[in-house]
Image (cartoon, rainbow, N blue to C red; front, side, top):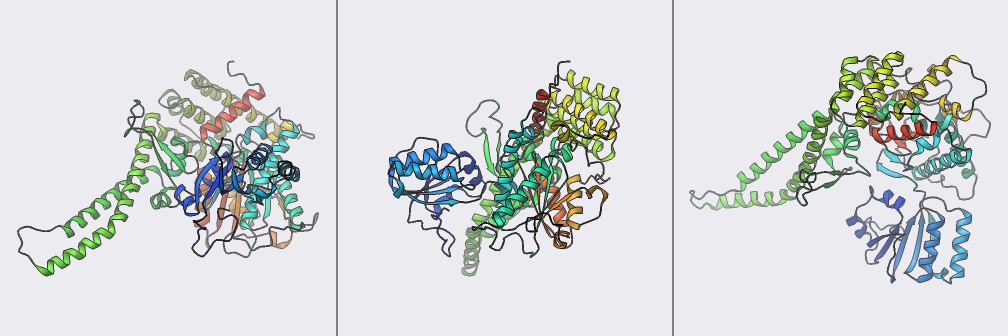
Length: 599
């Protein structure tokens, strides 16, 4: 795309003699942000990047690459820019398929303004997703959980949300170049997405421009991958619980977005600019420390930072020792020659030492910021209590109430209360009331708590009543909150999602999986799944509707590494949310359901 949609030369970069302008919208800027940095854009001849919705001066002798979503406002702006002759030529790239109506509008606008000659080509890139690393992506669809669980939502609202998810997943599989076998639980958003994705791929396979004819790039297996689609309500507790490993902590506590985290310096809180102000750090696969330690528990990360710093100091001292001369020793030609060799070696090692120092300083800053938050908010205490509830099904009531009255933000205490509701299925009404009272005493908005409490009671009622016809709301609720989780949780606290994915990939005959649908877009419509859809599978795409997190991603990566032979598992979600963000979405649903937090 950056080479004007021409094949790249052997060197891997475009013709840097052709200076180009890149124009993006916010969504496509976020797509590019984790993938390519500014200096890499320059290697491809892109000298400047603009947002499509800002006023720009004419650069009539430069070609422009537009990378935007196919929306009516973007089409209008492209026509306006072409009519003004802002750039010499326009190479239009859309993140997903350009609808025929918008394509006709683009053509009519270009003809009307006599600027068709400036539109070089139009490309559908099928890139409607954000790649966070080689095994994780997000569709960047905010508040999907609210949209799909809104008791007031109309059919058209739910259909629009499902269409957006299907569009993003279709782009993922076009990019991977594979047609998956789809598995999902019956009922709720997962079935809706799977059914529509199956239909979308089927329709495309019989079209003239079949994008799945080329060999795929997903692993090295000749077997088709499995696509497991889940709804956030399948294991809601994972979305709100506190975490203790490095990458989930950086996201949950420091708010990492698009692989970038901003750490507030010591002077920032006091309003001091300069050295003590906020610092921004990239955390991606070019950072060897991050790659090696992002799944480690935080205490281990702190120890590794200290070990790396000690090793760096030893290496610097070794360089200084080997290159240092001694004034009291007579001139010796052989020693001079030896020192010269050591000096050359030291010069060659300087770039590597400099990069190591930058990396150590980066993670020292991040670890220090995390430690400050952990101490001030008692995050280790919240995590410990939640793990006890989720693994043992029990909790020290005194410690629980003490945590709700002690250190921590309102969000921390609310999340602890939510995990209590979700994990302690046998808790008596009086015990739940005492937790609610402690939250109110701590001045916590309990709307989310009351919403989950109401859904929990509805789930219990649904489990004891054989319902015939369900309303739209109850149909969603039949798969919510704790449904299915208790059947998969083990004493070792392996996530229900991971256990389920492992069973699906290994094609195990578990009672909990008997109701799971199997859809094969390559099979004749209405036919039974073929033997090639049964598994076991070596590769899988696991997709979470309603918000994912790095805890689930790390658990699936560990599953792939633990299996022998190893499995290639990609994790995706509608958006990556922190526990606080998901608890706020639960609060929005509480307001929509009419929950009264002031009662």
